[in-house]
Length: 328
Image (cartoon, rainbow, N blue to C red; front, side):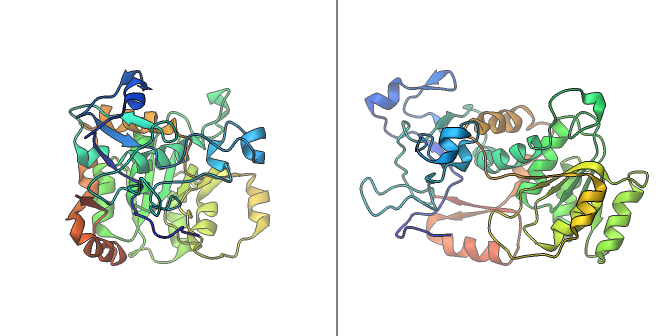
């Protein structure tokens, strides 16, 4: 990514309002006004889109594609005042005119609230597989539809949670980390496929087909960020099904695919790039209303102080745990 250094990293964050300006105090936030002490989360990408690029003018329903979109922690520099424009700091300056703010329930644990942004990514990815119209046509995702999820990292597990809440039928999760697969079972996976034990792609594909009467699942969601998973996932998708690619936010390289397979299977391949700002409302509801049934807090496996941030980054690089958080 082209990063405008210097920056303060951190785009998934929540916190309590310490001070609030008069304009911010008058703004309505999901039906409420804001005050000191409120627990909030912030949509990291700008909500006032440029209005000039092709996508803003002709695809206004996809604000995530604005070519001038800026985000806390990655594309907003802290060089100029007010400087505090990233989540990994004691204080963050939030301009609620340019960045959407959502008020969180007072009794929502911060270990759950901090998952709002990744849940927005995950729930939007699942929604990409929805099909308007007649559910009986068996197009896309709907109640009782089977889902395979490649990767049981935070995004994959939150896709699993969203699918379970939305009424999915059989859900299969593929990963090679034992601890992650255990959490997948806690989150409601019906079957797990351990890629460490079933190491050959063709064997994993066959396992998915065995679990679905030889067909493959109605929907497959790729959450690994590993290019090889793409071609494998296409084979796991039943003929006429849907494959959603959300894991490759970063460019991890290329993979060889056979276009004939896509044509012959008559499948839909859908990309999912972040989310519209309104997705946070969905994410908050999913997390808050279902925290008794799904142990979301289990996702946060590490918590570091601000001065231990480097240690937190090293933990991620070693693929230890799941969600690593910073608590200033």
